[in-house]
Length: 222
Image 1 (tube, one colour):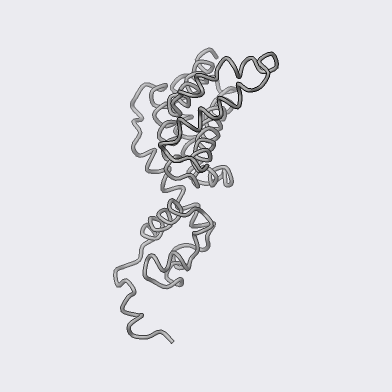
Image 2: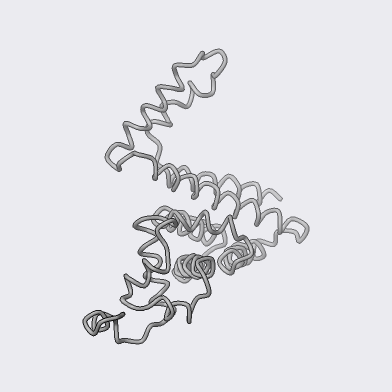
């Protein structure tokens, strides 16, 4: 039986869907998707599960809303009036940084590609490709190449960050990988030996943007 003392700990202010989403994002960022339960959410919001169900149907609905919210913030901060290549690079880097902070977003977008956030990403990228007068027959492929690259590399970067590598140990981690590569036979793996030093010293965001630029150069050639 719920006691009077327990009831007084419940929040009395209005519970909105945005508050629920914000709390869900905090849980996801701190402990991952497995930690997001309606019980944990109710505890954080100091409310009952029934009040949460009024706004979201289930965990899948909540993950959709949370990832849509993160991507909406990225796109709201981008400048549509910039030159198309600049605008695409800004959107790409914004998504890369967002997934770096919220690793679960990348997995969610890949898992549910029909969700609003994916549509908004394609729309924003596609609008810039239309300004560039990319031929209609190439629009879908060009947009797909960009979006798939953005989500793939951002997701991989976030996955790497979840390895047991603290920020200060990144250089040591990369050095260890490069050392493993260069232990292989250079006659069999000449490329690995050639780029090993770059692997040790590279910047993830710079590497990501270089890939965007290569794709955009190909699109420009069309």
